[in-house]
Length: 226
Ligand code: TMP
Image 1 (tube, protein in one colour):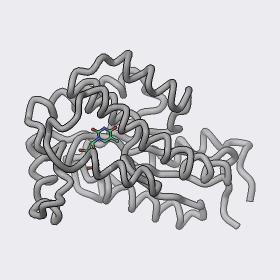
Image 2 (cartoon, rainbow, N blue to C red):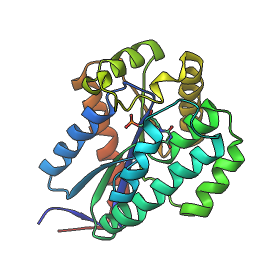
Image 3 (cartoon, rainbow, N blue to C red):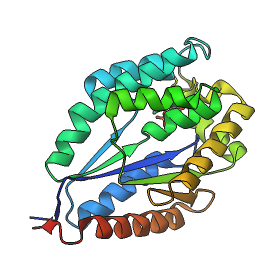
Image 4 (tube, protein in one colour):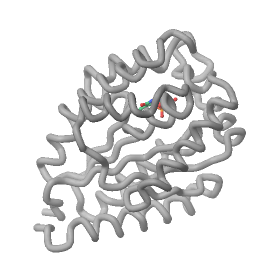
């Protein structure tokens, strides 16, 4: 049996579009599995059947289809479902959960990007999840031009069901949310590590694995079994 982390360990990947999150979450999951960890790889919005159904409402369709607060409530409805059905049970079983996006995305996209009162975002978070936070958050930081170019080159983008609603929101919106992520990281340096995503996949992967093993080591000192 591999290492079991008491109370589990929750890692989130955050950042704007095209930063390579889906590639890097997979690489990290493989690397941790090779070290014997039991890993669950998941995503937001989504990561549980109900949350995946809500995802389609958020990532497709008209840019202005939701009022700002409604959009936050939809993200948090999906998030509560994901955390309650997927994240907490996996953590209770001592697993490492890796999520492609989580709550910092709402603060960055809806708070900083759309300008919804940040206190409202915090209140909704607290009402939905209390003080629950990731153990480690990796923020993949990339210039807006490079990120959107990469995101728009994804294979699904030509389809009518393309998940591109946020990609179509304009350069200034994306600039604001990038600054938002950097401010979030500055306010919580213990939890958040900013990773320069303009480099090669391999170089980014090395930094991510090193930050993760350091955080896992710290969290599991004296608490690991197996
Ligand atoms: P993805 O493209 O990383 O799968 O994420 C879907 C989109 O949803 C992405 O453009 C960011 C956006 N998003 C928010 O605006 N707020 C949130 O809380 C989350 C989780 C995602």
